[in-house]
Image (cartoon, rainbow over all chains, first blue to last red; front, side, top):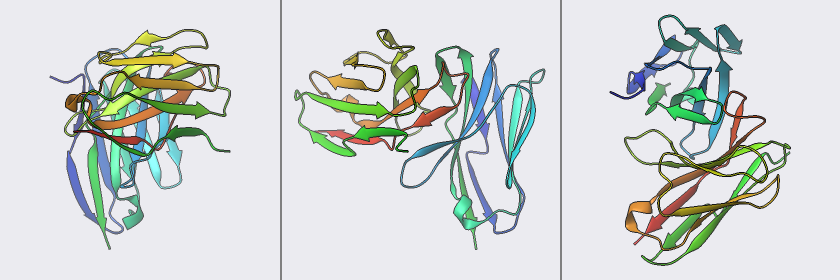
Length: 108
Length: 113
């Protein structure tokens, strides 16, 4: 079993829908990252959180440390949100363990 | 503000050839990392440098060497490329370890034939 599990692996939505991507992990962590990888390949950091909830524009990330679970929500989804979303956990100061990613496609 | 700059973007090597992937950051970050990304797998850490003057092995260091040339630059060298090293390589940096926000380069798509 991978230390970081994301679900779903693939997600197709219609423009305007509310989207949730889940991340579960099996180890103690110091921080959790949500990253976005566009078709061109570049990776961008969306959030880093160790407790509670963060919001940036239409994106919201939550984490429940006791349940070892995090969610990334996208409100009013748009085709430009189409990308791979990657969850990664920091298990020590210098290392991240990555999930395999969730491929999101938002259709107009 | 360039962030993390990685070169080259694409490279094709023959088995046994050597090459160096270059990475530079302009954010005065202490920590730098090299990852590889393969289909069906998450990013995996090859080597990292927690601070200038130090380097350490990650999960998959075999076949690679690194140099932290100065605070800005962290290079990855393949001494004798193998087809198993065909992958997309990412350099990343962070202020202080991976409990601070990470910034990634654009990636290098390497094919070894």
